[in-house]
Amino acid sequence: MVFHVKMEQAEDGWIVVECPALPGCVSQGRTEEEALVNIREAITAWLWAEDQKAAAALSENSCQPPVVVAV
Image 1 (cartoon, rainbow, N blue to C red):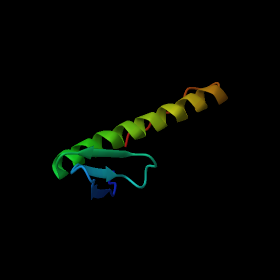
Image 2 (cartoon, rainbow, N blue to C red):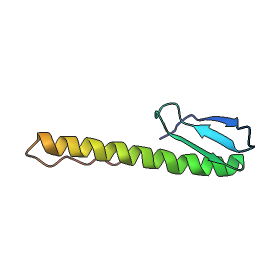
Image 3 (cartoon, rainbow, N blue to C red):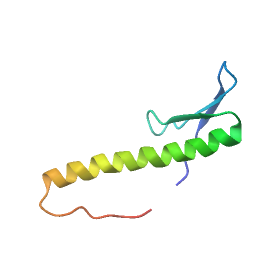
């Protein structure tokens, strides 16, 4: 998957990077390269957490196990 991110330099010199498609998915780094590595990790963690919430909701409302699809 491809995500667009927004990068800005904070007052303290750090690079803050945000993924607008994923509300609350924000990270930072001392350099642009570090910030991009960190936002990739944040995006992965955000998607995993949302999937865990969805899986829990599915298991509460169904007698059948959820189907897993890799992308």
